[in-house]
Length: 306
Image (cartoon, rainbow, N blue to C red; front, side):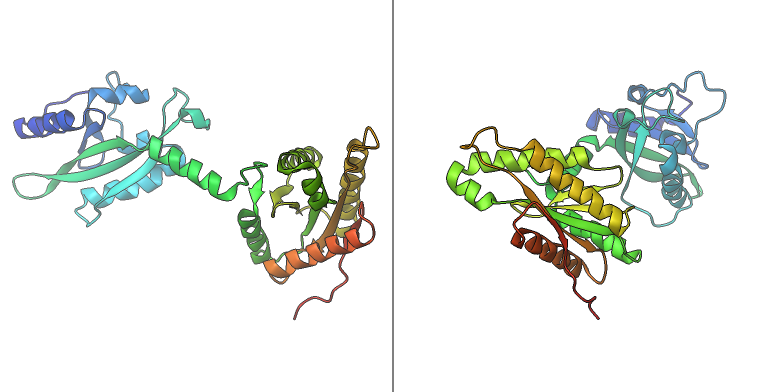
C-alpha cells in the first residue's frame, strides 16, 4: 500500500531499496501504523492494498512476539535511546493468527530511525526489515550439534547434566538410570570399531523405542547411556529398567555360538544433592550390576551427601 510521501522521504526510500533490494522498507506514522511498505512485503503474504484500516507494525510479528516488538517501536517513536536491531518471527501463511508450524515462520530483524518534522518532533519512522532466517537456521544447527552425540543422535552428557540441574533447581527427587551394553571393550577388540559403533547406535534406537513419554535419553560417554525418568517412583522406575535390560538381552540373543552375546546392565539413582552426586550414584549402581555378572539392575546404597 502507498500513501503520499514527501520528496525527501521518497528519495530516502528509493535509496534504501537500491542498496538493499532484498530488504523491506516500511514507513510508520507516529503511532506505529504502516503508511508505506515496499512491494517485496508481498513476499511475506501481506497484502495491505485492500485494508480499510492501517495495519500496525506489530501485526507483522508472530503473536507471542508482538509485545516485544511493540516495546522496541514505541521506544524509537518516543525519542528514547533505543538503537540497534530487534529480531522477531513473521508467520507467512494466511492463518497467521493461529498457525504454529515452523515451516511458516521466518525470522526478520528490524531497524528503526525516527522521522522528525520541521519543529523537531517525531512524526513517524523509517524501518528496514532484513531476513535473518539463514542465520537463525545456522545457529539452530550449531546448537543441535553442540548438545547432540554425533554417533547416536541422542542428547549428549553436557545437555543431560543441564537438564539434571534444572530438575535439581526445582527440588529434584526424580529417578535416573545409567545403562551400558556389557562387554563393549571386549567387543571392540574382537570385532573392531565399526561393529562397536553399530551396537551403540542400535542400543540407542532400542532405548528410544522403550522410552515412555517424558523420558529423556542421552549418551553420557562411549558406552554409557543415561535416562531421566521424571514421572516414576523408585519401584516403577526399577521395573521399567529391568524390563529394558531383559528385553534387550532377549532381542540380542546370539543366533550362533560364534556370534557375540549382547546383554545390558543398569544402575539407578535419585536426582538429589548435585549433578555429580546423582550421576556418581547411578554409575556406582551400574558397577554393582556388572559385578554381579551383568544383565542386572542395581542401586547403590549410599548415604545422601551432607
